Image (cartoon, rainbow, N blue to C red; front, side, top):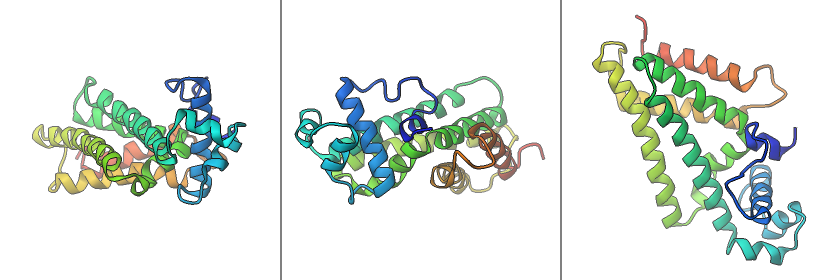
Length: 208
């Protein structure tokens, strides 16, 4: 499996929302380079070379290297937030919705671990305005998970004395999957998602 395929999470055409095709190829190349070398050690020449294009061609689609990182981060955070919103708006009680949220969120971070590493761990490379935009999306992500946990506490499904702290612990647990997940490891993204969903339900005291 190539890095581009890993970042797609199984999609037939990774980053299909990015057009034209040259811009998409550059973005995929940037994900690979940032994940492998880090943002600061990656040059625009590195990215263009991976995409099979000249360095000058990159500037037709992206003004700066930071603009590429911002686009990657924005798309990744939007997708992750959409996953959590879908789970939060689903049917069932808080325990069921939290289980679905964690399973789906973890599966995304495992299946798209290359992209997720860039999205989650290169935030400080963004300029103030772009970083503020991404931080706002992260606060929305926190709010969605916190809302499900609060629903569970209110309904008597969960025993959580510290909802904000528990929310942070849950999200940290999920996000860290992108750091260590290996496609050649013993578990698939689905299996890791199921394991973490069970761990999180135990964390919030579901079923006691």
